[in-house]
Image (cartoon, rainbow, N blue to C red; front, side, top):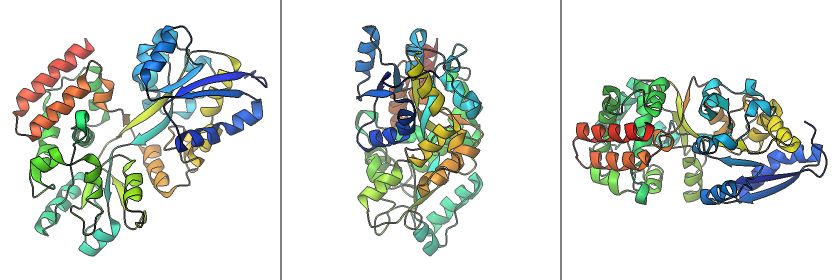
Length: 390
């Protein structure tokens, strides 16, 4: 792409520690081939990025959230003018990074939320079978109850963000009952949040989240149990519940809390059965500069070689088709297969709708679990949604 030895490339991202080491591992072939000098800066504070942009000194590239693609739209360089290999990404990965017809964000790192964690050895002892359809999951839940086991650990306490595990669960239920286009319609505002499909999903979630025969402690347990504790309870000895629906990070939390447990034997996951797509998060590369070094970075990361390097570094998942078949971590191999074969990928609703919708959604689901009227809750959320998207 015309980059020369000694060309500097400034990067801003939120990663540090082992994550930063993995990124450097991924970028090493590019650095070795071109002689580009990386000038990275790591921060969790978006205000630093805002300050740099407002001062007219943005980084050459930033790895940040999809909302910043809209925020900085007028200052970003379109990916297809920088040498990005768009053919290596499904449309449902490119679409969230496209603003007013311009492809401004390259999805580089992804994690999936539409999965359920369980203990294979416990399932085997109790005679439970991993479900492959939503009906089979409902049947399994009822079988567990009849057997005297609590099916779910659904704790969602998380300080000011209490409720996010519940809204994640509801969105996955929507993917089962309605599909990814429906979820995207809620994000765009084409479907109001008090639509019947939303109510159906909330009621399905509420049946399990409020009843002590289905989840640890019933409604109060759901509200007061920390989201990490909710994970641990499934893998304690003896287990307090049989399953927890949680994102891909849960595996690392189990390994940290219970280092003696083995992935694939003592803990594992399966995709939410019947889901017509996946819910997940992604980190996006955005370019404020179109220098040869920037073009080289984007051409490399979006190439099949770049996707393979990302997978081999075990830095979560890559939306790049080149990642398929190149994961080495057993859990990432399985998650990578789910990502590679999905027919849709939807971002978190609350993270994507602006104007404080996410916080309103967290409070709403907490109120619902606490017994508030669902119709009134969804009418209120629809109003917040409409105002945010007007």
